[in-house]
Length: 370
Image (cartoon, rainbow, N blue to C red; front, side, top):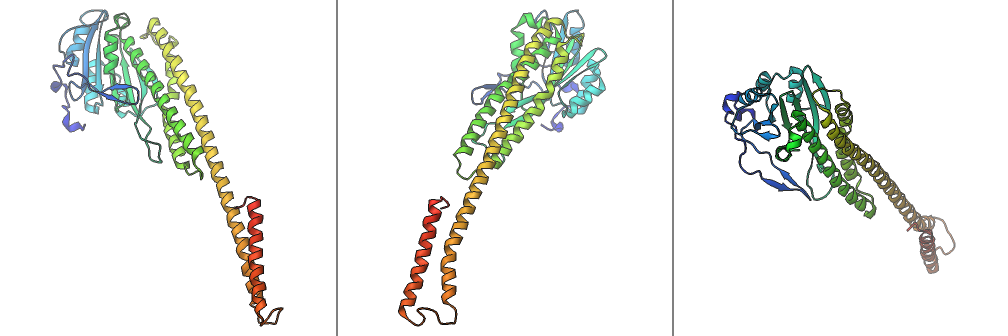
């Protein structure tokens, strides 16, 4: 969607419905993924919550924040999808978002991190989506990365999503059905988003292991070891996956350490579970990377052995062909030799050629050079 289709100001995204049409679902191998539910070009959803319940009403972001601040204990959850600089700047003016965090959210090329700005926490999470494909080739895209930013305040949480990975519609739906968790405030949304992102990691790493099994079978089933490019491609995709996952370890550890006042102790307990899942994914990725390196080394060794085999065959045939070359060259001299000018000389030379070639062929065959 280009910025030309957008309003540029929030006056064109007012009257946001609590729920739009039923979200479409598309199938991956074993898992359904919610498509983003759009109520406007910019705002995916905007709701005010109190005591674990969502308040009724159709509110724009400014009115939602005003309603949330009208009574202690309320907060607003605003979900945005790929906002432009101008759009996010206007949201920032309403919610008091720090300009450095806004700049990071617009650029959407950040490493996973968590920063604290005055009375606000800003978290960046990398989302991952598995890309369906028939088989691994040297151009296959296995994983697609996106980004989710979370602005966490005392009475608001703003989520900004970039890319097709990790739609948050299902997160909001599940959280709205867990009143006890939602009653813990905006930090519950941060936990739910982080949990959803890491859950996606686990799904994708399982799919990648399936690709590893496929590549391994093809490499060891190939006689000539011609799958090097395919193995390299999968290794590049796995590296992209690791770059998104591994740097998240430190931000999650910061959030569970009690470093941020906006994250209550109850949410820290939930985040520890997310940390455990994340570490398990990192271990699985490390194992997958080691296995892929072993497959690549085996593939290169297989190719080298095949090349050596080809060289032996070429050397053997060259030796066999050298026999008639040597004999006909000898008998081609313009000097008298035994059998010169006689019929039996032809038979002797022919016999020497056939016998010599036959002996060499038998010898090379015995040594398995042919």
